[in-house]
Length: 161
Image 1 (cartoon, rainbow, N blue to C red):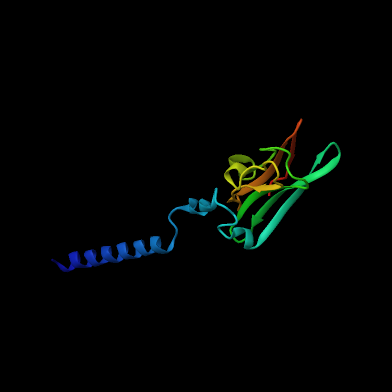
Image 2: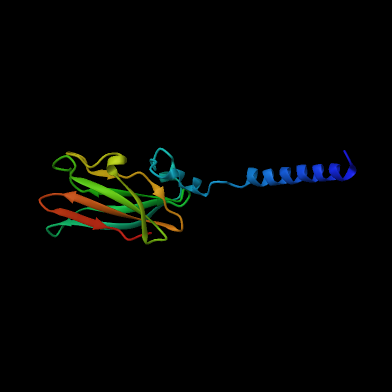
């Protein structure tokens, strides 16, 4: 092997080594940040790491406050989830639910989840439920909507945060 071939070989080896080190210390998949999507905020520990209540909206039936819906989140995990709390036990199964919507750039709908995928809808005798969490860091924003299935459907929605 000639001297110039040896220099080219070593230069190429050095280039490959440096290039592979860049990938070893830099995440390749930007979407890996979305790994918290559809996970339980309590079992992941996110509910206890820098918890936030972005917004609380009260639910009224015939002018009487019967509960509230919250958009909750974790500043540590960069996630959001929905939560509904009724002041009295549900009179029948599937009485209440929360839908959590996620938006890209705050305006384009991305995905949703609900209590059915969380700890279950509010059934007879129960008073609350929560959704799985979704990624909620800029450019993503989330909103929560409670749906009460009574003689008429009652919907109460938070803003996007």
